[in-house]
Image 1 (cartoon, one colour):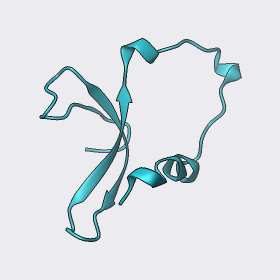
Image 2 (cartoon, one colour; image 1 turned 120 degrees about the horizontal axis):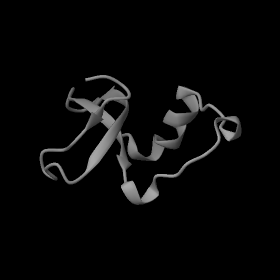
Image 3 (cartoon, rainbow, N blue to C red; image 1 turned 60 degrees about the horizontal axis):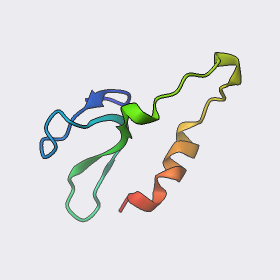
Length: 69
């Protein structure tokens, strides 16, 4: 599995899809953990490419900081 892959979680079945944003290692357990973004078909939008700005990985992980333990 790698960043950008689309995955499902076994507990949800095929009903919910997620995009892998990154990984970290849980310092307490040593377990590798994926940071996921829910892909919700109700939130899919169209936009001109000229209207988009890239987001650095550093900024993206800062946004998820509250979820990483």
